[in-house]
Length: 263
Image (cartoon, rainbow, N blue to C red):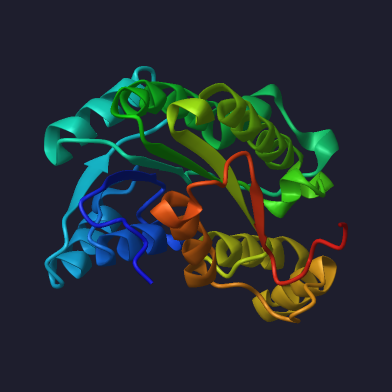
């Protein structure tokens, strides 16, 4: 199936690992130019080296999307290097486990900045370019925690709930101009971040990492009985970013192995 992504240009944040890395790889494989944004420069160079073997174009940008002026810098860099901007994938994010009664003001601020406000700023900046072209896709990687809050990840859950709400607002405001906004809502997905959190929990509790992972899977209880993969989430992102999703806006696409039980 031709997704109509050839010749398009996309920004992917949090692109050095996990879901973001897979999204960047898959977009490039479809012939889409990609500005890969992340704080970890080494991971970006590894990504570029891997993609480069296939002849696709990926431009690295080492940047902190929460920094003042970062949104304008990212948008301007995309236009300068790729000549256009059609797709923004807001994927940058991080969940840090911490009991609610131990959270500080800094914990709340840092999570909201990274998991919500950076995406809000980038989206508003990108819309200005996309509206002028009459075509655009805003795809936000939310989380099942935004639907079913986890008290051990309260700031992250709150930020992802806000992201779901923002996506609907962006859709209402700009879909008539050709700029569509939707969310992918992953369930528990086997990424480096999940593995790192499991290792940290194991160290804190005295359990093994495998025991923590098994407990995590049982807690989420996906109907498929397994963790998701970055490739499975990336496939949903690419669909929403494509020509095939031309009448999909304000949507939330759960990619959670049947974790969500509601209708």
